[in-house]
Length: 198
Image (cartoon, rainbow, N blue to C red; front, side, top):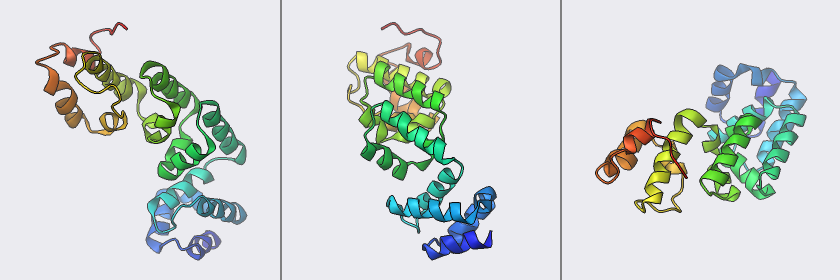
Protein backbone atom coordinates (compact mmCIF):
# COMPACT_ATOMS: atom_id res chain seq x y z
CA UNK A 1 0.00 0.00 0.00
CA UNK A 2 2.85 2.41 0.78
CA UNK A 3 4.13 2.64 -2.83
CA UNK A 4 0.58 3.31 -4.04
CA UNK A 5 0.17 6.11 -1.51
CA UNK A 6 3.40 7.59 -2.84
CA UNK A 7 2.05 7.49 -6.41
CA UNK A 8 -1.05 9.44 -5.40
CA UNK A 9 1.00 11.97 -3.42
CA UNK A 10 3.40 12.46 -6.32
CA UNK A 11 0.45 13.35 -8.55
CA UNK A 12 -0.77 15.97 -6.07
CA UNK A 13 -3.62 14.08 -4.38
CA UNK A 14 -4.19 15.57 -0.88
CA UNK A 15 -3.64 13.37 2.19
CA UNK A 16 -7.32 13.75 3.15
CA UNK A 17 -8.41 12.23 -0.18
CA UNK A 18 -5.92 9.38 0.15
CA UNK A 19 -7.13 8.59 3.67
CA UNK A 20 -10.71 8.59 2.45
CA UNK A 21 -9.83 6.15 -0.30
CA UNK A 22 -8.00 3.86 2.12
CA UNK A 23 -10.90 3.97 4.60
CA UNK A 24 -13.75 3.47 2.14
CA UNK A 25 -12.13 1.41 -0.62
CA UNK A 26 -9.00 -0.28 0.73
CA UNK A 27 -8.90 -2.88 -2.06
CA UNK A 28 -8.09 -0.12 -4.54
CA UNK A 29 -4.90 0.61 -2.66
CA UNK A 30 -3.92 -3.07 -2.65
CA UNK A 31 -3.55 -3.22 -6.42
CA UNK A 32 -0.21 -3.84 -8.08
CA UNK A 33 1.83 -0.64 -7.98
CA UNK A 34 2.39 -0.57 -11.74
CA UNK A 35 -1.37 -0.85 -12.34
CA UNK A 36 -2.16 1.98 -9.91
CA UNK A 37 0.53 4.12 -11.54
CA UNK A 38 -0.99 3.43 -14.95
CA UNK A 39 -4.53 4.25 -13.80
CA UNK A 40 -3.51 7.45 -12.01
CA UNK A 41 -1.61 8.62 -15.08
CA UNK A 42 -4.61 7.88 -17.34
CA UNK A 43 -7.02 9.69 -15.02
CA UNK A 44 -4.76 12.73 -14.89
CA UNK A 45 -4.36 12.66 -18.68
CA UNK A 46 -8.16 12.71 -19.04
CA UNK A 47 -8.17 16.07 -17.30
CA UNK A 48 -9.23 15.15 -13.76
CA UNK A 49 -7.99 17.54 -11.07
CA UNK A 50 -6.02 15.59 -8.39
CA UNK A 51 -7.31 17.83 -5.60
CA UNK A 52 -10.97 17.08 -6.37
CA UNK A 53 -12.99 14.09 -5.16
CA UNK A 54 -13.82 13.02 -8.72
CA UNK A 55 -10.14 12.20 -9.27
CA UNK A 56 -10.18 9.59 -6.52
CA UNK A 57 -13.58 8.33 -7.68
CA UNK A 58 -12.24 7.87 -11.21
CA UNK A 59 -9.19 6.00 -9.89
CA UNK A 60 -11.47 3.75 -7.83
CA UNK A 61 -13.78 3.05 -10.76
CA UNK A 62 -10.95 2.21 -13.13
CA UNK A 63 -9.17 0.09 -10.55
CA UNK A 64 -12.28 -2.04 -10.22
CA UNK A 65 -12.38 -2.80 -13.96
CA UNK A 66 -10.05 -4.87 -16.08
CA UNK A 67 -8.70 -3.30 -19.26
CA UNK A 68 -11.01 -5.60 -21.22
CA UNK A 69 -14.06 -4.50 -19.23
CA UNK A 70 -13.11 -0.84 -19.64
CA UNK A 71 -12.80 -1.20 -23.42
CA UNK A 72 -16.05 -3.14 -23.50
CA UNK A 73 -17.89 -0.37 -21.69
CA UNK A 74 -16.46 2.24 -24.07
CA UNK A 75 -17.65 0.17 -27.02
CA UNK A 76 -21.11 -0.17 -25.45
CA UNK A 77 -21.54 3.59 -25.20
CA UNK A 78 -20.29 4.03 -28.77
CA UNK A 79 -22.89 1.52 -29.96
CA UNK A 80 -25.60 3.50 -28.15
CA UNK A 81 -24.80 6.67 -30.07
CA UNK A 82 -22.31 8.48 -27.84
CA UNK A 83 -19.29 10.12 -29.46
CA UNK A 84 -15.80 9.69 -28.01
CA UNK A 85 -15.95 13.22 -26.62
CA UNK A 86 -19.34 12.54 -24.98
CA UNK A 87 -18.12 9.28 -23.43
CA UNK A 88 -15.12 10.90 -21.78
CA UNK A 89 -17.01 14.04 -20.82
CA UNK A 90 -19.60 11.86 -19.07
CA UNK A 91 -16.87 9.91 -17.29
CA UNK A 92 -15.19 13.10 -16.17
CA UNK A 93 -18.45 14.42 -14.71
CA UNK A 94 -19.94 11.17 -13.37
CA UNK A 95 -17.19 8.52 -13.13
CA UNK A 96 -19.42 5.91 -11.47
CA UNK A 97 -21.70 5.57 -14.51
CA UNK A 98 -18.99 3.35 -16.00
CA UNK A 99 -19.66 0.61 -13.45
CA UNK A 100 -23.39 0.41 -14.14
CA UNK A 101 -24.20 -3.00 -15.63
CA UNK A 102 -24.51 -3.33 -19.40
CA UNK A 103 -28.08 -4.61 -19.03
CA UNK A 104 -29.11 -1.58 -16.97
CA UNK A 105 -27.40 0.85 -19.35
CA UNK A 106 -29.11 -0.66 -22.40
CA UNK A 107 -32.48 -0.69 -20.66
CA UNK A 108 -32.16 2.92 -19.55
CA UNK A 109 -30.94 4.20 -22.90
CA UNK A 110 -33.69 2.33 -24.74
CA UNK A 111 -36.31 3.86 -22.46
CA UNK A 112 -34.98 7.43 -22.61
CA UNK A 113 -34.46 7.38 -26.38
CA UNK A 114 -37.53 5.43 -27.52
CA UNK A 115 -40.08 6.27 -24.82
CA UNK A 116 -39.02 9.75 -23.73
CA UNK A 117 -37.69 10.87 -27.15
CA UNK A 118 -34.32 11.95 -25.76
CA UNK A 119 -31.23 12.14 -27.93
CA UNK A 120 -28.33 9.89 -26.87
CA UNK A 121 -26.10 12.97 -26.67
CA UNK A 122 -28.45 14.61 -24.15
CA UNK A 123 -28.31 11.54 -21.89
CA UNK A 124 -24.51 11.65 -21.99
CA UNK A 125 -24.63 15.05 -20.28
CA UNK A 126 -26.47 13.55 -17.29
CA UNK A 127 -25.05 10.03 -17.30
CA UNK A 128 -25.71 9.56 -13.59
CA UNK A 129 -29.42 9.04 -14.30
CA UNK A 130 -28.51 5.66 -15.84
CA UNK A 131 -27.63 4.42 -12.36
CA UNK A 132 -31.06 5.26 -10.90
CA UNK A 133 -33.55 2.51 -10.14
CA UNK A 134 -35.54 1.80 -13.29
CA UNK A 135 -38.67 0.49 -11.54
CA UNK A 136 -38.67 2.68 -8.45
CA UNK A 137 -37.65 6.02 -9.89
CA UNK A 138 -37.28 6.29 -13.65
CA UNK A 139 -40.58 4.71 -14.75
CA UNK A 140 -42.89 6.27 -12.10
CA UNK A 141 -41.48 9.75 -12.53
CA UNK A 142 -41.31 9.61 -16.31
CA UNK A 143 -44.91 8.35 -16.38
CA UNK A 144 -45.96 11.52 -14.56
CA UNK A 145 -43.85 13.67 -16.87
CA UNK A 146 -45.38 12.02 -19.96
CA UNK A 147 -48.89 12.82 -18.73
CA UNK A 148 -47.96 16.43 -17.98
CA UNK A 149 -46.29 16.81 -21.38
CA UNK A 150 -49.26 15.30 -23.20
CA UNK A 151 -51.55 17.86 -21.57
CA UNK A 152 -49.20 20.74 -22.32
CA UNK A 153 -48.58 21.45 -18.65
CA UNK A 154 -44.80 21.17 -18.91
CA UNK A 155 -42.39 21.69 -21.78
CA UNK A 156 -41.72 18.62 -23.94
CA UNK A 157 -38.08 19.67 -24.05
CA UNK A 158 -37.79 19.52 -20.26
CA UNK A 159 -34.40 18.21 -19.15
CA UNK A 160 -35.08 14.93 -17.37
CA UNK A 161 -32.11 15.12 -15.04
CA UNK A 162 -33.71 17.55 -12.59
CA UNK A 163 -37.02 15.73 -12.00
CA UNK A 164 -35.22 12.40 -11.83
CA UNK A 165 -32.57 13.59 -9.39
CA UNK A 166 -34.66 15.54 -6.86
CA UNK A 167 -35.76 13.86 -3.66
CA UNK A 168 -39.20 12.30 -3.28
CA UNK A 169 -40.72 15.24 -1.40
CA UNK A 170 -39.61 17.81 -3.99
CA UNK A 171 -40.74 15.69 -6.92
CA UNK A 172 -44.21 15.21 -5.41
CA UNK A 173 -44.56 18.92 -4.69
CA UNK A 174 -43.29 20.20 -8.05
CA UNK A 175 -44.62 17.59 -10.47
CA UNK A 176 -47.58 15.85 -8.81
CA UNK A 177 -49.34 17.91 -6.13
CA UNK A 178 -48.91 21.12 -8.13
CA UNK A 179 -50.98 19.68 -11.00
CA UNK A 180 -53.57 17.55 -9.16
CA UNK A 181 -56.29 20.14 -9.74
CA UNK A 182 -55.71 19.75 -13.48
CA UNK A 183 -54.98 16.00 -13.51
CA UNK A 184 -56.79 14.34 -10.57
CA UNK A 185 -55.38 10.88 -11.37
CA UNK A 186 -51.75 12.02 -11.41
CA UNK A 187 -50.94 10.54 -7.99
CA UNK A 188 -52.36 7.19 -9.10
CA UNK A 189 -50.19 7.36 -12.20
CA UNK A 190 -47.15 7.98 -10.02
CA UNK A 191 -48.05 5.09 -7.77
CA UNK A 192 -48.40 2.81 -10.77
CA UNK A 193 -52.11 2.20 -10.32
CA UNK A 194 -53.07 3.40 -13.77
CA UNK A 195 -51.71 1.97 -16.98
CA UNK A 196 -50.67 4.63 -19.45
CA UNK A 197 -51.78 4.25 -23.03
CA UNK A 198 -49.75 5.85 -25.81
